[in-house]
Amino acid sequence: MIKNNGQVMALLVLLPSILLLGLFVYGFIGWTAYTSLTDSNGLQQLSGLPSNFVQLRNYSDLFNGSLNERFRIDIVNTLFFTLLFILVCLVLGLTLAILLDQKIQGETVFRTIFLFPMALSFVVTGVVWKWLFNPERGINSLPELIGLPGSDFRWFISEEQWLPFNWQQMPTFLTMFALGLVIYFALRWYAKKRAQWAAFAGAIALLLLMLITFDVPRQALPLISEEHGFNLALFAVVIAAGWQMSGYTMAMYLAGLRGISDDLREAARVDGAGEFGVYRYVVLPLLQPITLSAVIILGHISLKIFDLVYTMGGDTNLFIDMPGLNMYLTTFRGQQFGMGAAIATVMLIMVAFVIVPYLVTSFRTEDKR
Image 1: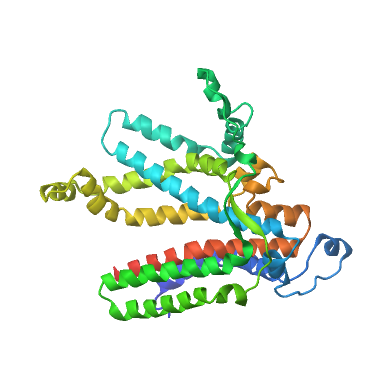
Image 2: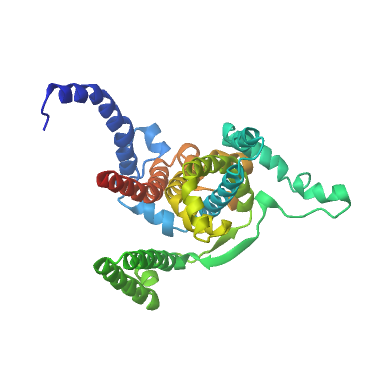
């Protein structure tokens, strides 16, 4: 309830922004979600015919239709790319931050050099690394400068795959991932002596384990049989994206390191901890909020990446294809607006799985304060 004139004035000032945000963000998100439930296409738009409400048919075709294998390749590519991209940025960013935290001479110069790739767009990054990864004239030919044979790795056009699996096993893999999360939280709650929550998580873990044992996920959600795997061509995209974003991660970690009191480190050394122990038991635990923020930001970038992939591989290289590129081609070239909206909605849900837990944790932290 509004109690005074100050609150009324604040509401009036915020009202235009709230209305515009509701219309142009959440309103259009809602319209996209509705469009994904129709068969809207370019022919209907030109002829003036209304679109038909097809419910979840577009989503069924994406995940289980014989003509939409490209989307499933994109999902697999996104999962592998996201994991590797985040890992590379975190490890490289933390390493650079620790080195700079040693107060070396020329720190400002090195910090500027490490942050410089962020000033470039992904388009420029894609062009540069496409030249470097040229199988005939790129870094493959560097060993020839010292008389060694050049490499024949195809980089972003490589057709090799690792970790092959059948798409039918995806429900089982997702259930196993959920099982891992539940076990993690069960152990965490047990360590904090929250026995009731730990017992509840343990019961859920036991249920998920039984479902996996009897192959219930695959039978409950039958999917088309297709072979997928980790395309080695993704290494090129991971290197290019990691090169550009590791400097940003370094800046986040460096700010966190500079915020840790030297007294805590000295106290750990007095207690007998070596330099590795100081980082293991003091520094890294205090950097957990930085790590979480970095994972959220990097995960958000990786899930909706478009320009880097398009610049490096064009629109026909399925070995590094991503949902964002597929959505663009389906919507604006194929004129399949309903299917394109379905791909966009799936991307939104994937991003929500990353963003929403972070927002919930942030709100709970603010409430405790």
